[in-house]
Every structure is written in C-alpha cells, then in structure tokens.
Length: 62
Image 1 (cartoon, rainbow, N blue to C red):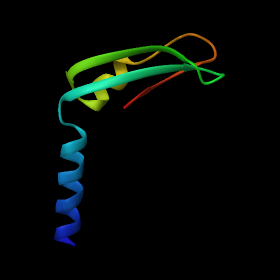
Image 2 (image 1 turned 120 degrees about the vertical axis):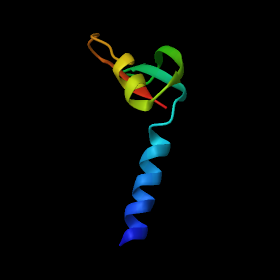
Image 3 (image 1 turned 180 degrees about the vertical axis):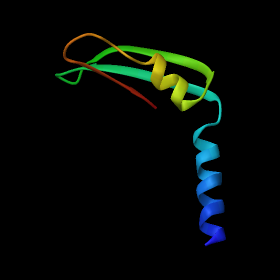
Image 4 (image 1 turned 90 degrees about the vertical axis):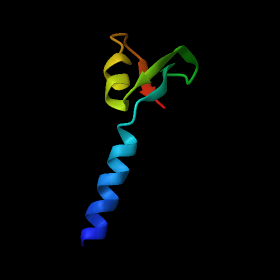
C-alpha cells in the first residue's frame, strides 16, 4: 500500500513540474486556429492561460 501511495505522489509531482507547454486551439473542422508556447509553467498554469471565448474553438495543452 505504501508503494502505491509513493508511486502516486511521484507521478503527480512530475505532472506539476515546470516546463515548456504548448497550447493548441482548433476549429470544429479540425484545423488549427492558433498555437502558443508557454515557457517554464506547470500544466495547471498552462491550462489557465490556454483559454478562448470563441464559439466553435477548442483549446488544449500538451
């Protein structure tokens, strides 16, 4: 049980590491609307920056 908890902790710490993240926004037809690179940010910070209010456009962080 302790090993599982340790593995979960290690995995979550890697997910929150600061590194370069790419935000890609796509239209409904699958074409890329815009793309931006955020340098030295956590995944949560990148998700907060990678937003849009445009209808029919979806943004995701990789």
